[in-house]
Image 1 (cartoon, helix red, strand yellow):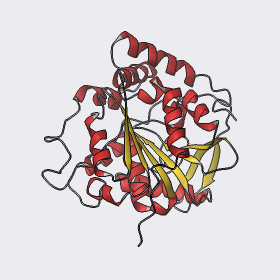
Image 2 (image 1 turned 120 degrees about the horizontal axis):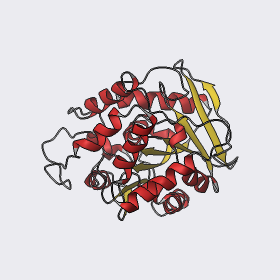
Image 3 (image 1 turned 60 degrees about the vertical axis):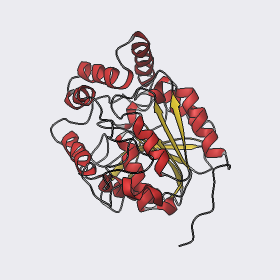
Length: 305
C-alpha cells in the first residue's frame, strides 16, 4: 500500500500511550521503523521516500508520545523518547526492526539502539548528532565543535501559523536559494497527495510539547556519560550515517563525529543539500538505505556478552 493511502492505526502500549502509526510496503521481512524530526508528526514524511523504501520491505511510521495523533506527553529526555518508542515496537509484537532516525529522531534512535540493542538489526542516522561528550576532546573529532547558526532553529521553534510553518521548513531544511526553494515546493506538494485522510501539517504546539522537546535538547547537551556520545562505542550493529553537505540545523561535521565513533559505521554526504537532503534526494536516499539494509558487507558478529 502506498503512503498516500495507508490508514492510520492505533495500538495501546504498556506505558499507557495510545500510539498512532501507519504500516506500508511488504507484508513480510524485517520492518524499517522511522522516527521523525522536531515538532513533526508522521504526515510530514515524504511519500516519495516512503514509497521507494516500501517497494522492498515493510515500513512503519508513527507519532511518538505527545505528538500528532498519539496520546501521552513528550518526555523531556531522549532516553524517555527511546523508552516510549521501545514500548511502541513491543506493543506491535516486533522482535527486531531496522531503525531510521531523522534529526532529533536520530538522537532518540541512538538511545533506542543503546537501550535495546537486541531489538535493532541495523541503524540509520540522518541529519543528526550525538550528545555532548564528557571529555574536553576526543580523538577523531574536530575541536572546537562546530555550532549551528541560531536563526534556522529559532524559525522552526517559533512557527505557529501554516504560513510560518511552511516558511520555517523551507528556510531551515532547504535554504534560501532557487534550487532549495524548488526542492521544498516539490516536497510540499508531495505531502499533500495523501488521500486516506486530511493531512495534519501543524507543527507540535509551541508552548507545551515543543518546549518539552527542547528540554530534551538541553538535557543531551549537558555532559552525562549515560547520554549517547560517550556510549557510541557500544553500538555494534551496522550503522549508516547520512547528511547534506550544508546542514544549518545540525552541522554536517556532526555526521563525521558519529561515523568516527561507531566502529561499524559508514557515511554518505549529499552534495548541495541541507537538513532536508532526504527529501531533496528522496529516491537516491531510499536507494542507499535499501542497499545498506540488504547488504551483508558491513555485518559483523555480535560481541559476546
